[in-house]
Amino acid sequence: MLHGSAPRPATARKSAGLTGRVRIPGDKSISHRSFMFGGLASGQTRITGLLEGEDVINTGRAMQAMGARIRKQGEEWVIEGTGNGALLAPDAPLDFGNAGTGVRLTMGLVGTYDFHSTFIGDASLSKRPMGRVLNPLRDMGVQVSASAGDRLPVTLRGPGSPSPIRYRVPMASAQVKSAVLLAGLNTPGTTTVIEPVMTRDHTEKMLQGFGAALAVETDADGIRTIRLEGRGRLTGQVIDVPGDPSSTAFPLVAALIVPGSDITIVNVLMNPTRTGLILTLQEMGADIEVLNARLAGGEDVADLRVRHSELKGVAVPEERAPSMIDEYPILAVAACFAEGTTVMKGLEELRVKESDRLSAVADGLKLNGVDCDEGKDFLIVRGRPDGKGLGSAGGSRVSTHLDHRIAMSFLVLGLASEHAVTIDDAAMIATSFPEFMQLMAGLGAKIEEVPQ
Ligand code: S3P
Image 1 (spheres, rainbow, N blue to C red):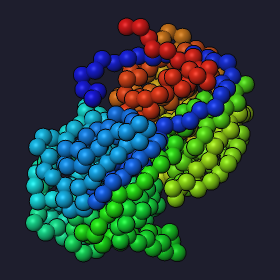
Image 2 (image 1 turned 180 degrees about the vertical axis):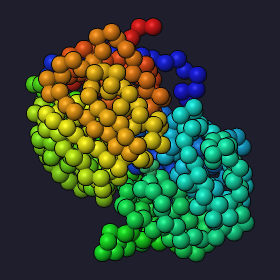
Image 3 (image 1 turned 90 degrees about the horizontal axis):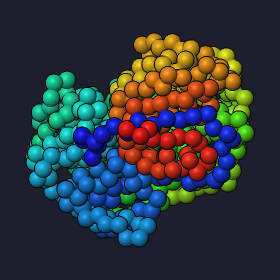
């Protein structure tokens, strides 16, 4: 969808206290999986609260191209699935735009089928490594044709009868774990995934909800063994998608760093595999009150009241990275306004996100006067609580590299910096958080697109 669209620069300026109550759009990970599992299951799936970002819509289109019927009825998305094992061969390449989750999980979902499927994406997605998913698929007997370095475009063709595998996930990645489990859905016998470091567990929880025979065992060292019986029946479900904690992070950090702020964010997913940022910010002294904690559709959900806070630098425990992997760019922005030094380690996975996020963050911070060091897998930020000297008086533009979280993080930086912060493109924010500009403006944030 973003192919060839013109970049839209935007500027954020020092703002007065942010106030108000907002609802964040649905969680991206759960929204992708809702379309995929609803599209695969027998019978009807009804979804409310779905994130209608470009990434998720592309997943919906792919499921339609493989036989799912998807329509929007009022506030609800209604899906008639194909039944497990009954996806149809797509008659054109499946275009996932910017979405790593969409493409990697769908490769797992359809790769074992005995027909050809081709996967393409935008310039950012076409640079990202796909070998992490293609290798276990190869082990299952899938024929793979990929561009140099196992990159997109990729064409897959499954064998007549895929072989179940026992796969130890070599990096902390929910996408890889999920792709292998989804390939297991169309594979006879037991597919086993060993997960040495726990990552977000939406695939396991949701597949169980759809009726898959999936069991998880955790040993004394925290190593998880996930077993899935293939070729079982999945049955359509009713899903209410909670607000995305990764999108919540932007207004939340904005309220912490802009003096005088007091905002409430309602209906936020609080699954413990996703709350590492909140924990870290609380250790930094953030005033985040968790209100109305409740269970909704098997997930922890709460409202968050966030007030401006005097933050102090911390060393973020490395083992926390999987539970806040998408939040390091915005944590680095919070660290800019903390007293002292914040040390973030174990960040190697940041280099293969929508951009090389470690470099993109460090380069953007330096451009805006922040004292920081980038290492192979770490970032150190020395804060400036009053924001003096931060931002760019000359209007230098941060390169966002088609990465929505880089774009939103730097716009938040501008809200408490002495000088404005300008980014080269805000268009791709629509991949995950189409309402971002409007929602932030409603809280009082001074963010505007730069007239071209
Ligand atoms: C996701 C997993 C994470 C995360 C991404 C969403 C998912 O990626 O960064 O935004 O929904 O499974 P990795 O599995 O590459 O860590």
